[in-house]
Amino acid sequence: MGNPYLEGNYRPVEQESTLFDLEVTGTIPAQLDGRFLRIGPNPVAEVDPRTYHWFMGDGMAHGVRLREGRAEWYRSRWIKTPALGGPPGVRYTIDSLGANTNIIAHAGTTLALIEGGVSCYELSDELDTLRAADFDGTLTGGYTAHPLRDPATGELHAVSYFFGWGNKVRYTVIGADGRLRRQVDVRVGGSPMMHSFSLTETYVVFYDLPVVFDTDRAVRATVSRYLHAPARLVLSALIGRISIPGPVSALMTGSGARAGHRSRGRLKPNAGLPYSWDPAYPARIGIMPRQGGANDVRWFEIDPCYVYHPMNAYDDGGNVVLDVIRHDRTFDRNPNGPDEAPPTVDQWVINPTSGRVTESRVDDRPQEFPRIDERLIGKRHRFGYATGLNNDMLITDLVKHDYRAGTSVVRTFVPGASISEFVFQPSAPGAAEDDGVLMGYVHNAATDRTDLMLLDAQTLDTVAAIHLPTRVPNGFHGNWAPTASD
Ligand SMILES: [Fe+2]
Picture 1 (cartoon, rainbow, N blue to C red):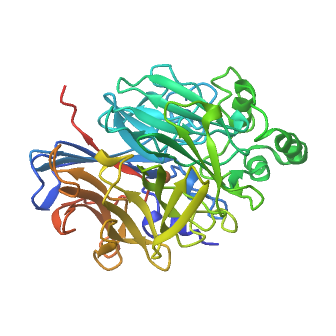
Picture 2 (cartoon, rainbow, N blue to C red):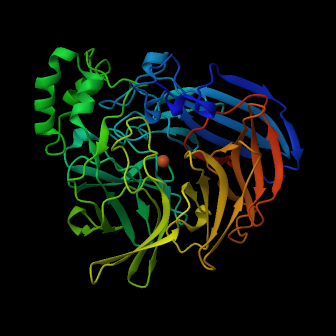
């Protein structure tokens, strides 16, 4: 049986690459001094196509170094977990799976990120795995793949989840110095997969939606067969209700070696995902004042759906506006990936006074990977960029939305192109909202090679194409990491 997440440009590459002096068409803007980073799943070993889930593949980071108009190098490196010869994970997190979801630069280091209580790792500038990422020892447990950087302070805000924490998720603020400065544990309805969150200038926004830890799938993935029934009973009594002590959840998830034990049950990389759609779980959005505590969260019920990725959020008078990519459902019938229903570009407006949530559709063409000019995180944006999906749910083109005008334009690429998330970088700190470049990978099926494309964000015309003599498999998130000026 085929698995689409192992075919075409989803197919893993078999080796790490180090390539210098890349061929370029066009002109790389001279002000781009840094690295274009992107990460995704890339299983090291042969995988079982019947059970492989795209979210569960070993992580591989990709980087292209730009300087003075040249593309100096391309590197790809696996995130080295203990099983791959790397350093131990953060204490009481899952370190049997490598970080594969997002890659950012913060406080002078490169961070490979993942969610759900799995260890994140610090990488060198050249993408070698250095150590587990615990923010100078200030953060216990796992983090998330989707922190948001407050443009006013440079701090990283985030909401993290882990099934071992009972019915709580954790809001954190990491300072510009790379250390935790604030943490609030917030009660939710159970043990949801909270892939991301939103931030306005006054609120933290929680998406408590009906994808929850699935004890049945978890037991099948971690425990030997003769223990299935008792393990399932114990887990279903605990998960999403009470906090499980760190050493116990470590044993359940395979970071036992770090805790002084070698666990038999491990959350297996390159296997199934232990989360699934639960139609009985109420879908809610929560808003908490940024300076508030757990008791200040207000919840608003919405129709069942799932949001992996908000575009942005902002305050509008007393209302809270959420621009999101909405999936009708996910992980219900398809056990291998998130492609169950065509995702749409939607807007929710919460009126905290009346308690009313108004939903409207911005664009019903399937899209994902929304990004904005990140100088506007938490503020009203005019432009948003998302990738368009074709009928086979393959990501093929780029859509620029003008929220003010209510219009959009589409940039297509070569026939058979498969593209990644595009990331905006302004041409100067004070440049206008769409004055800059969009950067992203485009895979050409005919040549089986990938170009890093630089587009003019105003026109979506090509500014430069950096031709890699290899391919970068379809993956998750990317970011521009400017060279530190200090
Ligand atoms: Fe994501």
